[in-house]
Picture 1: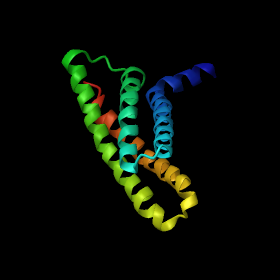
Picture 2: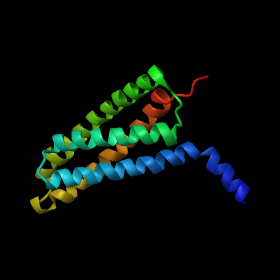
Picture 3: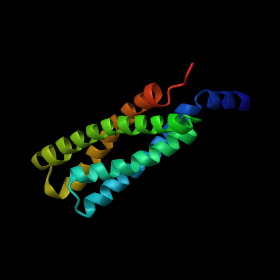
Length: 147
């Protein structure tokens, strides 16, 4: 039984690690977004700042513990640039979803006293989209196994 569980963990290690560290990055993203909102930053500035911090966190965790990259020198630089470039694409997705959901639709649909809860819901929804896109980019482009 233990051997079977260990075999499954090894088989799905990458996906489990991605979910774990992606969950941490998502939690960090949401916490930062709410802190930035409460200090009064506009949604777009808020989203860009929380993404920059989370991109750095995600790169380190993805490189070391999810995809176990051993790239060195210029290969590591290319990997980092590729990672940041792809994440900038999903940053744009996040900014658009947050702008549409929190800034445009929120005031039209939701009472002012519920705006923070609405903002949080939009942020969670946006994070689901971003996580899926980031995994595809990471798996197929950034940390693609050679050979």
